[in-house]
Amino acid sequence: MLKIHAGALRDLVRSIVAATGSTQEEAEEVAAHLLEANLQGHDSHGIMLLPRYVEHVRQGKLHPNVAPKAIRQEASLALFDGGMGYGQRVGRIAMDWAINAAHAHGHAVMGLRDVHHLGRIGTYGEQAAAAGMISVHFVNGVSGPPAVAPFGGSDGRLSTNPVCITVPAARAGDAPLVLDFATSAIALGKCRVAFNAGRAVPEGSLVDAKGQPTTDPGVLYRDQPRGALLSFGAHKGYGLALVCEVLAGALLGGATAWRPEQRERGIVNSWLAFVLDPGRFGDLDAFRGELAAVIADVKTSPPADPENPVLVAGEKERITRAKRLAEGIPVDATTWGNLVAAARSLGIAEIPEAR
Ligand code: NAD
Image (cartoon, rainbow, N blue to C red; front, side, top):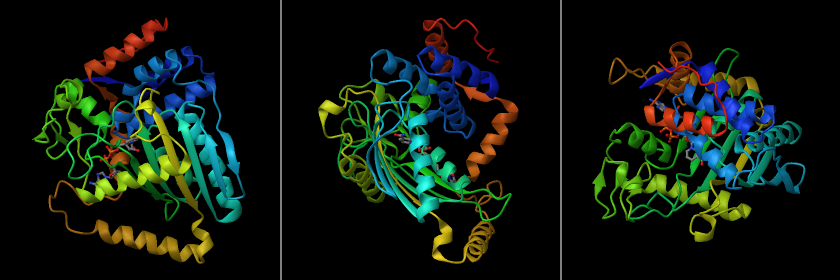
């Protein structure tokens, strides 16, 4: 595993995005989002994605410098078309709208459809939390043939449809709760990371094409017919994945995974977000006090493994972030090779040193 300094990696990613036609501002925003995913330990949603983004720009499936366009806009409800722009920027702008609307009206419901990959959904939850807002997100995705089997099924019908819920920090200096996960047992990108690194995935994540359990990610990338990812939590995770497909894809008029004609559009995300001002229910200080007490209480549960104390949502990512900022970001050789090849294909000569 190579290790690369976060700042140097960010500069390279920014140069690559800018070389595909993005403004410096957009390139900076996409680079910051991808690097933050790596810093927080979600390598599946970091720099590994960039060569695919470059390919999608070349194929006309991802359009640089696009802003969300309102299809419907009321005081506290809006539906935006993402114009297949960079999700990292289009999503942030759409979320800005929802946060402003929630400040003005106490709550906001925001839909965004037909946007290219939104990346790590926690980014937008953190954006809401930084503005003092609670947020709930349902996202569906369509990208090639669907990879996740419905509970009790044996082939891919849904995507890894993520759910995210965030709650702003109780007190200055505290951290927000950031619950942010794919509804598949593991993120699809994590299978790719494992496949690239020649590693097995955890048990209970995959079945082969015959529906038999396996830990070999090659069933998704090497085998034909291919295997499928399983949902987390058996029927419960599957239920959430289905709800994402309905609330984000079907309700907003976005892409849905059952339609074969949608699968060749690159990566298409649709996103339904609810943003809520916690002060509107009454005593904000009482809520904050209770929030801090609930978190303190769960964290004092004696750990089953003394090496692993109880954490709350978002905490593992903060621990990983501090470590990676200090030590550099681990990058597997295949991911690094793909990134360097993408950079060179765009005429970028300055490549940071990987240790
Ligand atoms: P994951 O399985 O690592 O779960 C992450 C969540 O679990 C976080 O909220 C984390 O704080 C919490 N967590 C982890 N360990 C914990 C512990 N010990 N105690 C308490 N909480 C703990 O995440 P994932 O499913 O691999 O998802 C990774 C990323 O992929 C997410 O950011 C998600 O938004 C993103 N994603 C995006 C898309 C898309 O289409 N844009 C699709 C799928 C996933």
